[in-house]
Length: 569
Image (cartoon, rainbow, N blue to C red; front, side, top):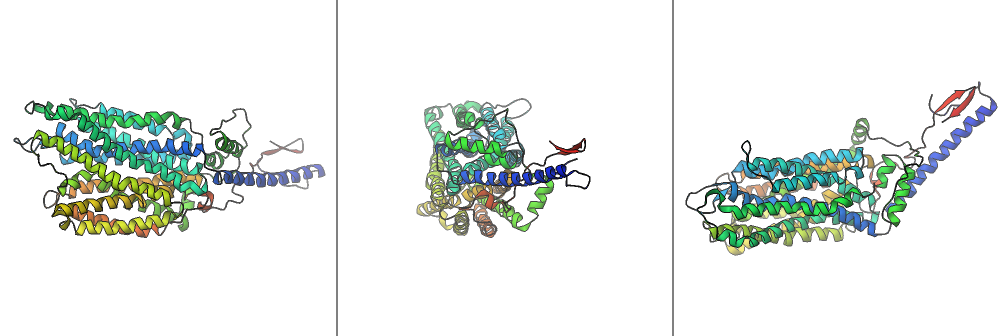
């Protein structure tokens, strides 16, 4: 028999009084626990910036640095792989070796496919079993899969490209897990006034990872310059031995920052919001808040009595009920579609920047067809990616960092989509004119950098931030994972489409039309952004679209009648 027994005629006056007092105490307890929860959350929301916040940003940011390095290093490594394992298009020219279309597509698209899986899986697991329990697991997957790529080789049953595709898929699963986990952990630990900047600082490490991949590739290429130039060009498939070593070092170094950050990820405390709203342990959450805001960590007492409150539980029925309401569904749809539209262009450009620059003959070496041409081509690809990162990607992230808590997320995302629509219209419809002279090609590269800038001072940053804020705690990671996975679906479609469409009508002839398609998707992103709420300056509980007064209740005590008395336990 459960619940508080109502007084009945069969009870004595003493029993009736005891039952009434019990109900009164439970109601008072519910009020106390509910107020306790809101007061504890207010401590987090109003906390001063501390070294613990710096630690959260650093630990989460290193993961995004690693993610970006591993994702975008393949942009350069695929050219190196082509020289070593590809087939030559000519028997007379040196350096015409390249991966075929299927191989190139496979090594580039494997990671986004794995990332999509990881975002959905780890997003759900983080809400199910905890942020802390999952944090670090995804990083271990990245480390193992990255190191394994560097050790890959041909076998009797499978070629090295197939092996790389498998490992890059598994690496993508780990990278996918990093998105919802890092976003939710940084948002749930942040105070309201700096939450946007904390989350942007974490995500901005992606720009440095992209830059680092190009810089490391440039250094490695320069280090192997003499070996490449002095190699015996008649030595068969082993003639690009130095390049074979170069791409392995480039890819393998991607696991180093992950190894450094692993310990800190495994030891980061659980977020108080998860402990309160999902584990339903307000006492422990209050201790955690006091600990992390003072000394930066908290310990659980294994002997402490756990009093679990009654709070909404994450179930499929509750999930459907919550998101069946238009005011909740439109936020999820707006987040998911905005990320989808953005990644069509972001990854369409990011994973194919070398192809686009070569299409307009920007930086194409005059020594093509010689051993020197191989070195010059690799060097130019590295330099081109360094320019694109330094001139567009990195500044965009940090301008977003400066304004995201003053302007707000929604204005920045709208500005980004509007500017990207204009830029891609100019690049696409003006492609032929921008490919005629050297100054015109420089203008094209400037527009390319400008597109990178407004992607990051725009929807690439805000589509990461908003889903980490706009949903209830019990669905925050799941909904972020769904939104991020929608983005990766866009990345996959962009990569497959780019690869299959770019040479329609001749080599690189369709690139201009692809840029026009990008413009169309940027235009649709404006519409999806209008569905989103402004999250600036609001607590995560305000943004959940759920009433917070009375959100938790005291645990219902079990009662039974023994010897004619009501006994509660």
